[in-house]
Length: 161
Length: 301
Image (cartoon, rainbow over the protein chains, first blue to last red):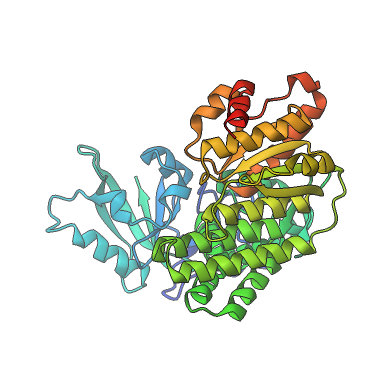
């Protein structure tokens, strides 16, 4: 007789999208699949907090990513993003996102678009979307960015690929 | 002030002790003190502030930043109280600071930065600065009186070259005296202007080191004072504290320049004494004046 396992309730957001947990520093999934009720600190690296985002938005493998709040301040920088931008998370936190990334989409009418998009996503009034960005002070380098809500607390996740 | 061992602090934060030590290296927070056996001792207030910040943070860095802000409220309160000439509120702010920190850290992280802030805002020749400096001087003296009696049979003679209690260097010197006293070392601060009868005091104190603090007296006055001390006590390890414009004597006499922060300065002086006790008397650093110069000053008098 087959043993039956209790089904773990799927974690979904208010829109019904499946959520996945990941570390805000190393990007790895937590060791346990249950909600991190005891500690939000990543069990792998110990240097990030466990966040949640939609499955198709969450960073895969070692994709670099940043987390931005509604005031457009950088709240988290992944280890891969630290290497990519040659910055330390401790120096980047609380700085404006425009100090690191600017829009690189030729069709975008102004730089305000990216910022408006990030504020809307961080405040939960906009769905996930894509944008093209480049590091500030650097030309000829472009990244496709997936931007969408993450949390908690609610913020905008910007995954570069 | 309640302190926690590494395992207790880690349990409060639901992380491993290794993670806590990794945070200390990467973020510089929580910043533990050391017990007599060199074990880490975390202040409960710092750990509790971080635990609360982690609940609402998006990263460890942002949580650390938030926890630091929460702790800096004592500084804001003290600056506000002293700006508003409210002595009771100022005392209360220091009480709050002491609930979360050791006396040393409360002085270095709350009292002195608050005074710096007021000095920058009003100027050190202003009435608000005078009010704040007098309060701080009184607070430091009270804390010094409450320090345990000297236990280490060590003594430091301080040549006070500050102007008055309104001199910012004088407050740093009071803090230095407090920290040395709390380390079990006897400290005696004497103005460098008073050389009459100095030999009796030096003989009675039998200092293990000499510190010259402040930069508001003439080189001649300091040189004469140092010469008299050396003539009585012989060569002793010597250090300069808050003597910003005296770079040249350090180069010519070997006196050590102490860091401007009182806590680091007191640690270095204790290390200097330990070193000198390990070395022979002849190898000790001389006082910051040459024999011929001291004799010349003596002759001038």
